[in-house]
Length: 144
Image (cartoon, rainbow, N blue to C red):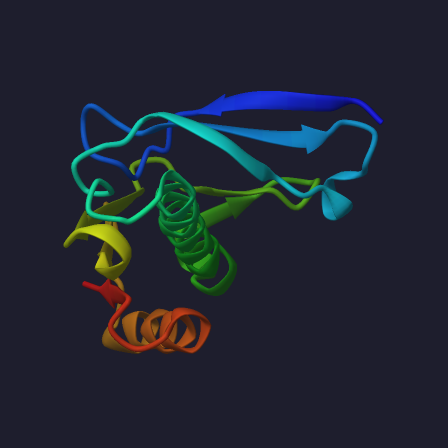
């Protein structure tokens, strides 16, 4: 068992961003790894209202995972905006970008997402919105 500490700068935090440290066992395969909060070296203004550093970490992690999962929902469900490599990796076509922003503070942040460089139909937006609502709850993600 080899425990490693990782310094993480969540891209979903305000500037200056949170700086979190978590540990994990390098001997475990990815699907069995557990990341354990160690400490926060800095907490951004968005997460300062939370009661503990551990809660700030958990909230920042949730924000980051929500953004990444919605990005994945778009790549997996709107095939017209992605190129798929031979290994199955999906990347946005040239000129198409995934845009995101958060509003609110603490545990009540709302993620707003959009695509630039392509026009999604209302049906496509509704598909992603419904999937996000099912995954995260109504009001946690806005597809615009």
